[in-house]
Image 1 (cartoon, chains in turn brown, yellow):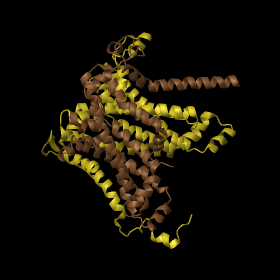
Image 2 (image 1 turned 90 degrees about the vertical axis):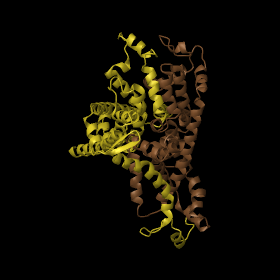
Image 3 (image 1 turned 90 degrees about the horizontal axis):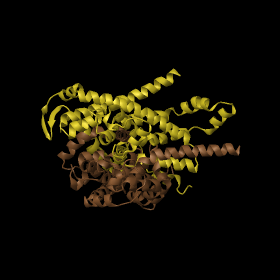
Image 4 (image 1 turned 30 degrees about the vertical axis):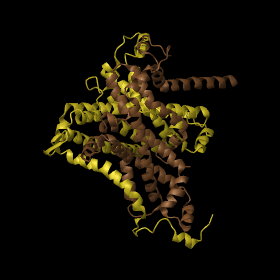
Length: 276
Length: 305
């Protein structure tokens, strides 16, 4: 019995280990390679661990101005986060608490935007942004990201606000608080878990997005990190060291945030229903 | 908790009676509706308008009826892309779904090892798609030497993965499976968890085998979760751009050029904006049709049983 049990534990350990290896291998190997000197990278047969670890590739990226693209990404991501959460919270509150004709239409709009693939919007959005002068600007990108993320944000926050006791808001209103102050002082703090979950989705979307930024922001001044990484692919060609180093700059922050907040991520994934 | 008398509660009711117009909800909804209107619905309708015009670079050149559509539908690159997208979507969906289901069954239990494994397999899904594809491009490349080493040990002459149409497509599917299996797992896990465990215990007490229970209880009760997973995977893969753009570049010779990549190149490499808009509309219609077909097939399947 114990031997059989032990065998089973061992077997599942092996299977789990193999799965984890298959999943993480490209990332780990990329990470290790980004610390290897150029000739060690192209060595055949390949060697796993960097024998003489170096930061040369990261230094090279710094010289190419990678910090500028990181700053752009940080600006766009945080602006999208703030704008989406503020607009989303107010809209979600209205949809959760008010019973009005037109609510169904708005819910339909939200679900419709959630199901429209971004790919079919790329070309006309490019044309439109150029007409209104927002093409190749960080503002344009922030507004686009907000438009794409708002439906899921509203959906998540609305579901959460509906579970909050409405009596608290009533009591505050009797005490003379306006609706605005009720939202800011009562609804927003109570919705913290849903705001965190929605915020994480906004952050990962805005930080990771490549396709929208590639189409809209082509100039060096407004380029975000993922587009910069893609351009490095053309610039460095088969010089994999700096390419992999740039890749790591893009994904390591996300991996850290994901592991730290995994519960919130998971709660938001399955269709956006967050339950406290 | 009755802090308020009934009448007081009536007076401060958050929702005004339905039918009487009140500015309250609309004031808070205007920013949402404005942003969606300008950045989603306006482009979508302008795509329709532009698709009927000659429109190159940033210059509109007059109405030309269905010419852009006729051009696209007769274009060999477009037809090739339809084939590539169908093939890729079919295989990527099947494999991602199968792996996702396997992972969901394996990591269903609430234990420390299961939740650790769920976190690990989700990492490729949450990191940048671009970087994921680039890392795989590196792993499969001849420069890395890893794939060559593997082939050598199998006694196969080393070759370029991205130089052969079949292996390039296989790499594309592998990229999809690597990234999205855990996404399918999460959606399917939600379905698995909604099955009352009493039902599974009852079947076990009655002596039903694992596979019998799976076929007769688990699968039927997971219909909705399975439908949602398949619809979301199919829609995601039909609209794929990043994987082929970064991993294979659409090559060799168009063997992995998907529909959206083809559209992307007409629009942003040739700046044939009118034609690219027509392609956008076609892709949009394909999406709607696909969802309708999948739901229809599922209903058909349930009636037959």
